[in-house]
Length: 81
Image (cartoon, rainbow, N blue to C red; front, side):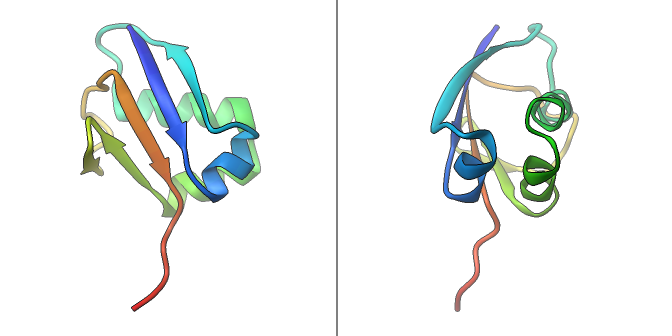
């Protein structure tokens, strides 16, 4: 399955790109994506992974066992009030 991963703000800085297509098995989960991103981009992406958010199919998901969809957005932590 092709997954389009879109990166925003610090996630884009960590990956050096705004988006990319990554091939995963049809059974892949959010944890699989996080592991792949950590391996690809190292410590700066690890920080985003620990404190950021992942939108799978447009909905924030925190469960690592959640299946991937065709689009995943990687968002850094947001501050404000």
